[in-house]
Image (cartoon, helix red, strand yellow):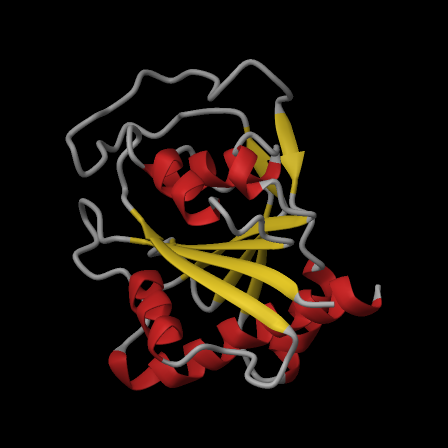
Length: 200
């Protein structure tokens, strides 16, 4: 069985002129991870724009129908990898997007207050810590575009990205000299998810 894996990151945004998740996706595009595994990968950098992010996510999933969707985003106060347990049905950040849009606080859509990540977070944490990565946990993915995309994906609101396994992971800023180690951790996350879906 070939597993279809969608991995996304984000462009830079106000206050963050460099986004390591964009660099991660470009690196994966240049040198795809999980070589030798029965995995088909698709990668996308999503715009930090409320009007364009979900259409871009739909476009990334069109004709692909991923089994696993893993979304990475930058949280500058984070160190290492922050595993997000919940996507909240809320736009709550006062920060404007890259188009200058600043939505009023509101639910994202009528529906559940939150949805849970379906990534194997405990196994991911164990794998990362076993390789020396810093791991933290969170029940609040924020009220900005990261949570916005996470909620749409995890709640199955994107018809083209109705993955069996979906979740979000925040990362901190990554100095260039640490990028290879960061990429290794991200690839370990992908590998853990594939193994979980393959073996249960």
